[in-house]
Amino acid sequence: MFIGILFLFVPFQHSSGETAGQGDLVYIVPVENEVERGLAAFLQRSIKQANENGADHIIFEVNTPGGAVDAAGKISDILLDLEIPNTAYVLNEALSAGSYIALNADQIYMKPTATMGASGVINSDGTAADKKAQSAWIADMTAAAEHNGRNPLYARAMADSSVDLPEYRAPEGEFLTLRANEAVEVEYAEGVAEDRTELLSLLNLQNATVETIEPTAAEHIARFITNPVVVPILLSLASLGLIVELYSPGFGIPGSIGILSLILFFYGHMIAGLAGMEAIILLVVGLICIVLELFVPGGILGIVGVIAIIASLFMSGADAGQMGISIAIALLVSIIASVILFKRVGLEKGIFRNIILSDATTKEQGYVSTENRLELIGLKGTTLTPLRPAGTAIFENERMDVISEGGYIGKDKNVKIVKVEGSRIVVRENVIN
Image 1 (spheres, rainbow, N blue to C red):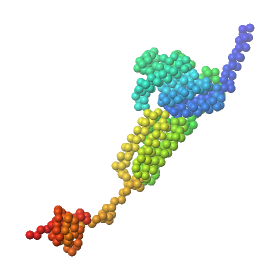
Image 2 (image 1 turned 180 degrees about the horizontal axis):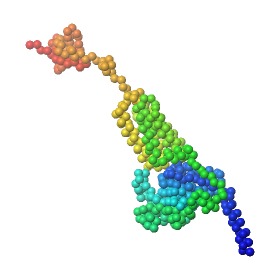
Image 3 (image 1 turned 135 degrees about the horizontal axis):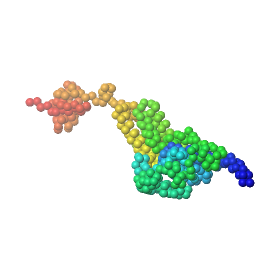
Image 4 (image 1 turned 120 degrees about the vertical axis):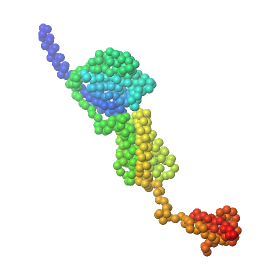
């Protein structure tokens, strides 16, 4: 009888395995490369698509060295609002902001060689963030762990080097990084899966329909452009191209590169959900003011234009401090380029040649404002009128307006020309003994 019952049980178990996840829809969403606001926009779009198509489970395949804290915070908000059951599957590494994202998922699985942790917060220049920023980040990490019932000690050790965990290679002064088996041991990961097939089996979804969402070309561009390293380069190219164009005849490659860089910056930030129409309008207003400044004297329009453009850049940035550094780098590049071009090229080419007066009324070009008759010096004549000190005198039958060198000279006095400065002829009384 026992054997009969066993035979009845075995087919039942086999049938259950075949139907595991049958009819379910699983979405695979990659969380790759650096964490920035472009990634947040991609995840938001992916989750929206999964919701609309009635997904039963979402697997976030995580492989990231970390990135911007503010972007990680945005992604965590997205995950916390997610009602669909979800899993973070760490393929290689979930470090820094990546570990924070993984901790906000419902459950975590890791590949055997994967790691998670090393989440100390640093500034864009590589230095440690101030105590206020570090305290806030540590609180976020521990809260993420507690939200899903995990021991907050290990999340704190990932972000706070003062926590002493030598048994996991994280003595005081070092950040904690958990290997896959260690993450399972401290109950930060539910299990280890060699590949996606094994993961689906562990989740009892091996027969589910699997859909993989990939970033669109526009999202790839947005993720690249919103990278904190790329932003200052793009703004520097924009400023450098436009500065060089001012010193070049006609409109050519430098100006095109400058405008294209500016367009790419705002396009990428719009796709990432950072720049709105108000930033674009402010940019256009700023550019119009700068163009008008070339034709309207005063300088006010130019100042307003520069302020408007800088404001539009700040409005498009995810982090005001990072954007400030990027703008400062671009301005420094512009100043250096302007000085070099001014010394090498001058203002005779480019747009400056149309707005700066370069003609001069020189003698070489045939312009003579007043004839300077130096040959008159030494001539002797007689005053026709008293000189008080100006008057009239005659020299070799030529009547001239003169001025005395000193004081009064009477009429019919002998005088001598001692200096000629344009139309000014200076005479001195010539006393004959």
